[in-house]
Amino acid sequence: MKIVSSIMMFVFALGIFFTSCGDKNVLNQNRDSAVTTPHEDRVLTEAERDALSPEDIVQDFKEGNQRFLNNDVTVRNHQYRVRQTAVAQFPKAVVLSCVDSRVPVEDIFDQGLGDLFVGRIAGNFADEEMLGSLEFATKVSGSKLVVVLGHQNCGAIKSAIDNVELGNITAMLQYIEPAIEMTTNFPESQRTVKNNDYVQEVVINNVHHTVEDIRRNSPIMAEMEKNGEIGIVGAYYNLEEGDVKFLEQ
Ligand SMILES: [Zn+2]
Image 1 (tube, protein in one colour):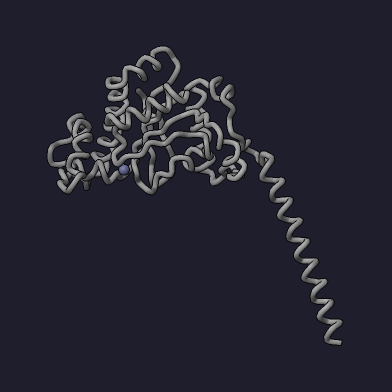
Image 2 (spheres, rainbow, N blue to C red; image 1 turned 45 degrees about the vertical axis):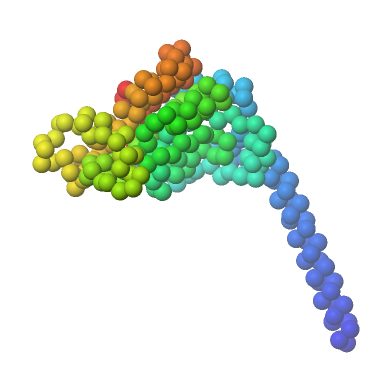
């Protein structure tokens, strides 16, 4: 009797083993085909990316941010994308963002692996190394849009307003000084980190200043923009709502 029940257990276990192998095969098949979702999830080819205008990509980002706000982001097959992008990448845009953990760049625009270059530095300014990275993304790799993305309640901006002096942070904050000097429409007494309107104004001016810095200090990107090959735009991310506003030039 014991032998019979042992054999039955063995057959049962064998059944489970083969069933799970079958599931794995189905999973692998799914990974190799693009997932069909209401929002198409696929990696752009070079020709498809090159056919986009900078305005098309701004529109794409606005629609992606709306899906993020609606909690309706695209379901992505990451392993499929890993394999599709391993040999070559054709990102349509480069986003210069702050390092802030509350600004997950791909997520807020509903973009996936291989869609974007992201340059991150506290205070989203463009020093020489960042300009080199942006030129790599645009001139060398063919991205069609540069987005400078500032955000609400930015710690780097607040530190610059407070004249924080600490280690390497001191030198870094000098890049944000011009934005503070630009923000003159508040009485002296209201130019503090406690004044949210003031902080927001400095953040936005820092974005404008960075956009101008890119044009001023990168003849390569200025020329590309003049020729309509790329767009250079500023945007502001609202931490409380999750929405991105593209700024008027
Ligand atoms: Zn920040």
